[in-house]
Length: 186
Length: 169
Image (cartoon, rainbow over all chains, first blue to last red; front, top):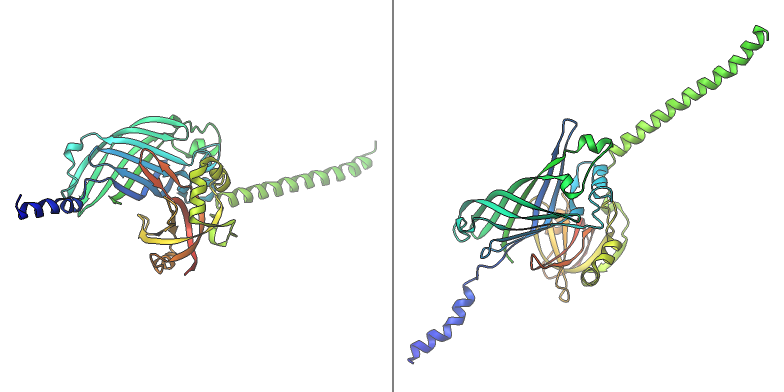
């Protein structure tokens, strides 16, 4: 072995240390919006505290959303949302989505650009889990990855039913959910 | 019965009727006012609410990691109005969320998760003045505890919102 070869070998671990592995992309401030529209009124709720992770290698996508962080314009609506009659957020403090990117080959996490996104998985709200497939956009820009997706949720699928009173006329049976997040390696 | 006695009898009856009607109107107005009050009920002013507990980042995080259901029952509110806490820890850094609010991560060397504090339009400047690595006490409302999520393969921080800096050292 020449001195040159030994030096090269010695330098190898250092080279690998600087080659960042295709690590997990994390967001600690995912934005989720609920939107319900009926002839009676439009209702929005926003949440900016979710945690999300995307594994560029496997395509796994996970979101965990603190339910008590949803903020409504009306304080009373927020109280109702959290109460045991509706989302029971004290007993079920987090909602979770667990899925994977369907066409992972179409997304190049190392190259700037905008890629169409299709994710298939399951959503858990309260104690109910349902399959969920959604589409959206994934944008790569100077090492930062942002995603945006919109999908409907049928409230009855999660055991949230408004049989009587104002909520039954003012809250839509299907609400639109928008997810936005900016991801980076931690 | 003479017509005379009938008229003296109907007068108090009419008076009672009038009083009953007045009472009904008052109840209707009060009910309407209460409904109006509920509909326009302001959000709780967290900073104006007295602090329920003062706690260290490590102690708070450990409480949730040790027994999540007991800690949730202790800290979270049934209608979403959780305990108002003053949390003391080391400032990891300051970021901005998608709502344009400052987010400060308080940590401790002996806990695997921290406390993530979202500020408000009126308190963002206080967060910006914090120095990473220094200690601070932040007041806010707790909205979620810390936990290890096996799907995320990450520790989730305690979520504190509507925050303001009580003391920075």
